[in-house]
Amino acid sequence: MIYLDSGPIYTLCNRHPNQMINSDLLQLRGSPFEALRTLLDPLAPAPGMEPLILTVGEPQHRPPQLMIDALRASEHLYGKYPPVNGTDEMRNAIVAWLARRYGLPDGMVRADQNIAPVNGTKEALYMIAAVITARAGHNQPKPVILLPTPYYHVYHAAAVMAGAEAVFIPAGPATNFFPDLAAMDPDLLDQASAFYLCNPSNPQGTVASNDYLKKALMLARKHDFMLVVDECYSEIYDAQPPTGILEICKKEGGSLDHMLAFHSLSKRSSAAGLRSGFCVGETAVIKAFLNLRNFAGAASPLPVCAAATALWSDEAHVDENRDLYRKKFDIAEEILGYRFGFYRPQGGFFLWLDVGDGVEVAKTLWTRAAIRVLPGRYLSVTGPDGVNPGNAYIRVALVANQDDTKEALTRLANSL
Ligand SMILES: Cc1ncc(COP(=O)(O)O)c(C=O)c1O
Image (cartoon, rainbow, N blue to C red; front, side, top):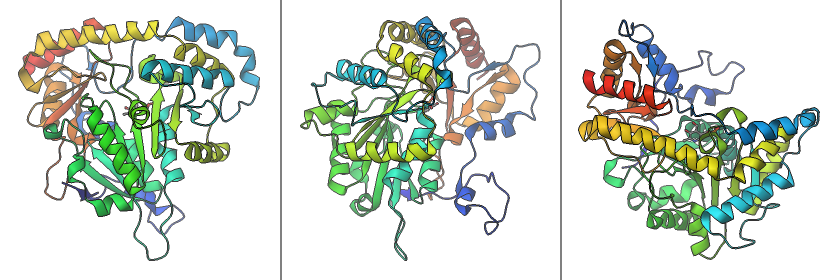
């Protein structure tokens, strides 16, 4: 079940490793979007149809007015250097939101100890690996960072550039699209500095059970690695709010040891351009992270902190946002029914459709229906058994408006 990264799909950097460049860069996997451009750009889209793009997970709903108002009201602050840990108001708003969302007792998460504001979680998920991974001593094996596959491509870059061995663990339908914890080798877990998990799973949109999250946390504590939980899709849910890792910490006595969770306003508040999120977790790690960010992180501008304070303090716009996605999942259910392995995702805004051969189908959909979707293959790696768990799938982002979504899914259903 577990295998080592089998190497780059394609190389971004053509310089020879012993030139003045960090040779670890040669291990980076190209972005899935570059691979898609290579696949589809030489092909003409179906003539006479307006191209519809369903590839990028960038919400297209209007960002809330309260964000714009907060930015305007604090525009006089753009001239100031912002502090690395943001403002008290923002961290207090985040802690209050966490307490409301997860029913946390007072004092379990401390605004002055457990929160690191970040400029979007992408760079934070990358940088954190360097904070929690000790360099291997001379002649010692590299530390390991465990990743699910399919995966968010930043996790892999984080592991590689932190000097770790990226070990991918398949996350297929048999295990609810999460890595099989029971099959993990204890020796490998002992070598791990971190285990990245995305809940709801990305792009499959399943939600980890409480039992699963508890087991993952217990493994982290037993084998002394950090459980890094990417919860950036947690607020885009269908029926039930997904359990957060903090709720599991609460049930287990309230300690945040061996855990970090990442939250973002990009999906929750349709504010990808604001670049605002936070990391919550173990005090010592947050302290070290903020210390590194003092050198290498871009602190959030004060108007962004003000906007984030307003957004974390408001739930009405998030309810509205969720409703817009639910309507699109209704449309998808109506059009796709039980074809292509359709299921209604519990969280997130992607369809993960089993179409047999995702790469071929992406070409067909572009040339016959002028719609662009992402082959699951580009989000996964091939194991030593030659199997890529994303091969059969396409990822369809339901981020556009309802009319375009309906049109695109109708074309998709008609052309397959
Ligand atoms: C799984 C996952 N995690 C994290 C991010 C980063 O989001 P942001 O940097 O906008 O907070 C994304 C963005 O698409 C994502 O898909």
